[in-house]
Image 1: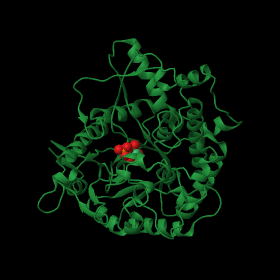
Image 2: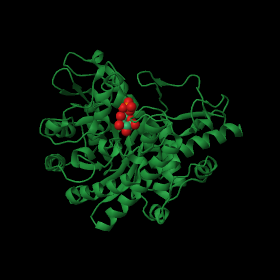
Image 3: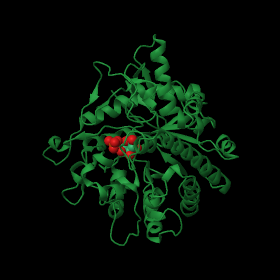
Length: 464
Ligand code: BGP
């Protein structure tokens, strides 16, 4: 069967500033929460590898863009690091950063690769975190100034902007489940963070549209479909709906419909943790929804009705309302521990078509992190990652089906272009189309999947 995608489909990959760039002498970059956390607790990071060098994209972006071309990219997403552009979060702009991002953007354009630029990828400037980060309303104002600065500097060439990548992750990681600095477990703060991120997004969208630039602005969300253990059991279904409200609709509804889901409003009222809403906020959120939706998909969420006791050692948590269901016989990526469920991508796209006005969207991340890929190196020094080709093509088949059925899905970006620094997992699991040998000065080699992806992009699809 031939899977043909539209002529102008966006083929490419995604990455982020903090995971790729690194820090170099004289670059003027300020500290963000990752630089800081690594400094105080390096043992929390796999093999004690921090974000200080990452994949050295700051030095090697020209070579990287060339490799993107060789792997069929017509588009590529990365993020501007707030702490690079405005080292203290507010105030002076770092001219070295302006120079770097200008050169990077121009290099992409010169090679026929459209830059998709995201403004926030988990990387709060430390100076702002010290004043509460997203729990502090002042961060919203600082973010809007930062966003406008980016639009002014780069908006004549960048036509696709994103306000956040996976804004629910700083909520979960930083304020509920302790996998991002500052590692608090306080639901009231989590709600403030989510509220301020939503408000900041709407305000940046408003600012962008007011500037009248010829481009569009969206948000990138990790939409993790919640499946009940038993569809015929109302308690399981209710529990899955709660998980959906907490982790998907908390950002999807305000971003696309301009309003928060009723189930979530009921929870925060009930727990008496309604964030401070100032006059005009809700109108801004209502009137400034996204032009475009990026969808990251890795795994589903399997849910059952609450069976375990609520943990009394801390305050309220989202999972007071549901339990995770360990489904037998599921397919697993053992390195990351995430279930692989290809049809999930189709279910998300169908949901967006049926319940979110069939908004223009694209797959902005999907991929597979594998540990120890060097064992698949062949005699030509190339990693034969057939499992990645299978993973991507199996997901693309479902994307194809959704498009056939009318979903407005405009592209597919794999996570990621070249192996990069995966937060506390550092370089444990490799995701790229291109390998990066961190022990050998970051040497790049295209994997088998990278060559395969070029043929897919060139042929607008594949046959199987
Ligand atoms: C997404 C993030 C990426 C990336 C990816 C892989 O959630 O947007 O930044 O890291 O997941 O996950 P991980 O790095 O945790 O293995």
